[in-house]
Image: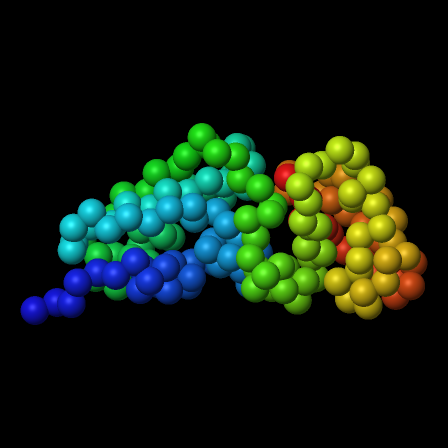
Length: 163
């Protein structure tokens, strides 16, 4: 007989599902997976909130969550994309912030309320940790990133925007 599904185990399995644009960070550590419910011993409901409403990778992430759980033996997987509570960059875990930094993306600062775009200025460089940096443009290759330049190590880098 198969052991009962446990939420902790489901979360461990979902930790294997990586963001398709940043493959070093899981959807759990990115804070995109917001709820997991075990309906019965054969089905799981996962709630996800994307980083941006128009995230082009959302379908890929939904399918990857389903595939991962089904490969682990979950018979029925329901994934709901939910926008009731907007995603916040504060949802990124400490492990996720470190993974972003290792990948070469400056993690967003944590905040209570964003009142000024200056929060994007003087972003610490993920390579040399200098704060002698400049935002080149608030528009990076995706909606969730801004482009910066480090005056110390002369590296261009992206910042995961605070939202």
